[in-house]
Image 1: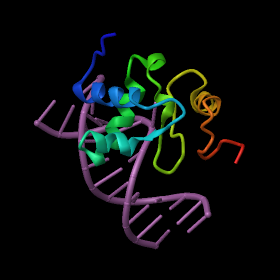
Image 2: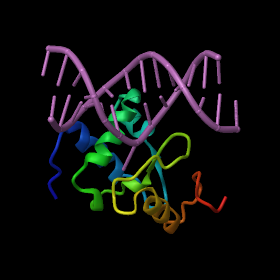
Image 3: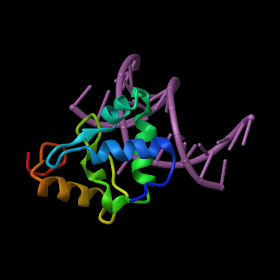
Image 4: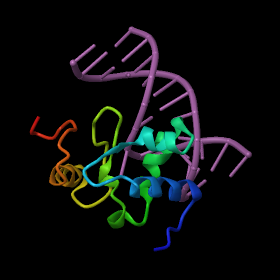
Length: 98
DNA sequence: CACATGACCTAAC
DNA sequence: TGTTAGGCCATGT
């Protein structure tokens, strides 16, 4: 597969792809891995603007507060929640399970 | 180059 | 505890 886009975006996607199944990573963590702790915004932006949404587990990326933040895919935030729960990771806010 | 946007974060009220 | 304001970064127009 050929990740096309900006270097920053590619780095972000790679970090997301490094996330093991059943685990989640926060935008801040990813930004920190890029040596730019304040780049959480750009990271989130890259996730939502990435043209490879289906191949990138962006649903495993959540906010630092435990909130899912958002999802550009079909179903939006709801689908994101569903996927996380489906992977057994229902430890975030708004999971309706508590 | 400057302005506007966004799935953010932190601090303050 | 919930909401508001400011700041920070990258991207697109």
